[in-house]
Length: 179
Image (cartoon, rainbow, N blue to C red; front, side, top):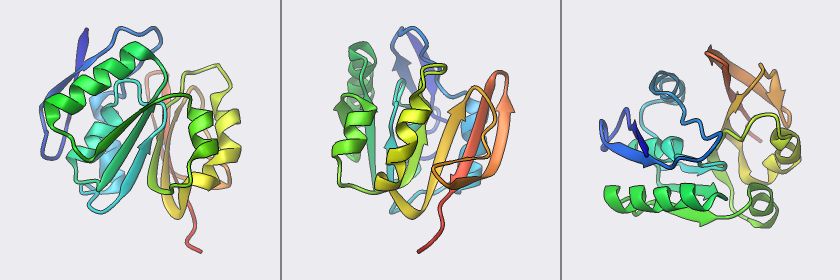
């Protein structure tokens, strides 16, 4: 197993294990530093969703920076087992782990989140399947973070307000509009 480092907050410099799952790409340190500079270093009082959790690094990073609650959804059993171990190691009581399909979760939940991290497997049509369901789970003035294989102007009517590129990864921060 490889490991990835939490870059900020109460668990800064702590390492979590990453399951050897084909196609799993933990968000690099530099990209996470940029993302959390955009969001603000402290996420106190915010509820976050890491929809295709994979390594869980985005969700654990949010929890480390004070998010009130973080829900990680992951389908792969090996990746999920690594998430359970990380939650236990970090004593991350504010992190909820759900094993299952991202689309089914979005269709069934009544919860709304202030920040949604969306880093699905590339070239499998996930963004197209997820897009119509995002308004159900995002607060109207929430933040949507998306990693994709190409630049995006927005998603689900949420315009991109910040974006960057690291190697083959295009990363975007989108913002809803207050009602």
